Length: 121
Image (tube, rainbow, N blue to C red; front, side, top):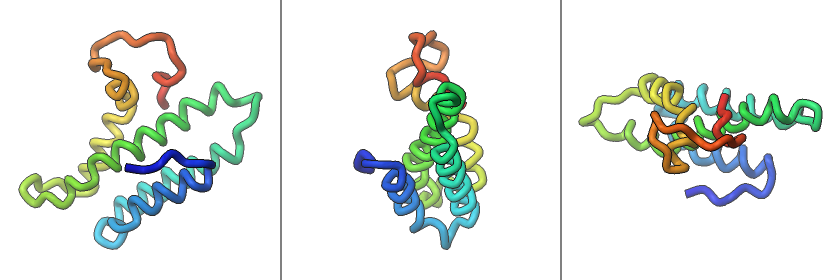
């Protein structure tokens, strides 16, 4: 389990450290993680009071992707599943929009409260 980051640099470094052990065996995972972390860095560098409301849902989306990948990545080690890294990334991309909703105890077909945390992009 990751500790709460103190700042954006720590946030990005902790995710990189989490996924780095998989990079040598799964080049797809390396590319995907680095892409997500680069997008997060770019968003961090460009956020302002003028664009916060437009940018924040993208932060949530990247965070959900990374968190979901962090929960599922060990499935690659289960030979009985026969799950490849590309298929795992496809699962993450399919499920990340609902990740926060499920963490908050909602079913996929449930209506959520009006909240910024459900505006994932």
